[in-house]
Structure formats: C-alpha cells, structure tokens
Length: 223
Image 1 (tube, helix red, strand yellow):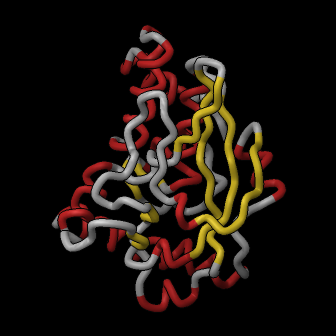
Image 2 (image 1 turned 45 degrees about the horizontal axis):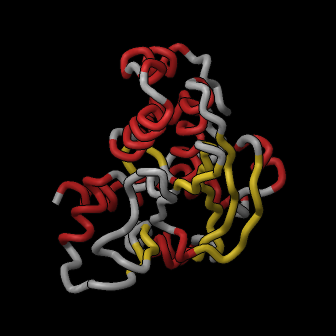
C-alpha cells in the first residue's frame, strides 16, 4: 500500500522539494499538504494504495494516513500506523439517514505516528482539511467546548490542536473506543483488523453510501 516508488508520488516529492528541507520543515510541509491539499472525503476502500489516494485527491483517516506514510517513508522520515475503532456518532452529519443507520457502531480508524528528535509524535489532525473544518466551525457558532460529529471529536471545537509544531495533533481522538496498537505499515494493520461489514453493506457503501457522504462533506465545505 505504501507504493512510494510510484511515479506520481515521486513527481510530487520532486515538485514540492521536500527532500531539500530540514527534517522538521519536511515533516511539517508534508503534513500540511496531506491535511489541506488532499481533501476530506471517503474513498472506495481502506486498502487502496497511496498512489490511488493521491489520484483521488481526497481521503479519510485510513487512506490519507497511507498517503502520508508513503511520502514520509520516501523522504526518509520513520513512521508507523496506530489502529483503533471510533464510535459511529463521530460521523453523524457526514453520514445521514439510512447510511448512518446502516453503518457499523464501531468504525475502523487510524492515525500516523512520526519519529522525530528521539520521540514519537501522534498525528491525527491531517484527516480534515482546514477549509472543511473552518466551515464546520462557522456553521456551529454556538459551540464553545466539546464537539462530536461530522468527522470531528474534540474537547475544544474552537481551538483544536491541528498544526504540527513538535506536538501531537488530534481531531477524532475523543471518539476512540478500542485500541489495536501500532504497526509498521497499513498492510500489517489491515491483515489483523479492518472494518467489519457484511458483503451487502460493503457493496452499498462502495456504490452508494460513500457518494452520499462525500456530497454531504462538499455541501459543508462549499457553503
């Protein structure tokens, strides 16, 4: 899945000049790119390779994480993936109607951990692009504290920690209800853990549900 030798990924790295930056600026620039230039949205499957996420131009926690890891590895930055499940109420609003009703209670989730200056940093807030998050904040001006829904689960909705500056970043962590631990790559994580859905529900998600979810996300971002 971390197909960083793919020509599209290699051309992106060259165009951005990431390998020429010092290590901190390299991590920060890659993080900001994946967060804001790969838009929040739902791909066909968690197991798609990084090159497909780049081609789609959008992704969610697991798929954006795959692209993030591929670019980091290609640029010499050690990283790993940490798997979880989150309560589906975190997705309410992005999921609506029968899509939300049919969704499993526990949604497969992951974030990326980066090794820098002798410690591991937990990076999760690359999931939502800033444009989407800011519109969501604008549409919920009454919320001054915790918020859960629309792909967000944080204690401080007005000031979530989403920028990397030698710190952990979180945007869905308050919705976590099960911890699967850390893995060297998403392939290894998905061999042991994945989204549990029946064949019928999986087909419905791929061919209808995710398109409705993406439409809801675009509506929020474009208001």
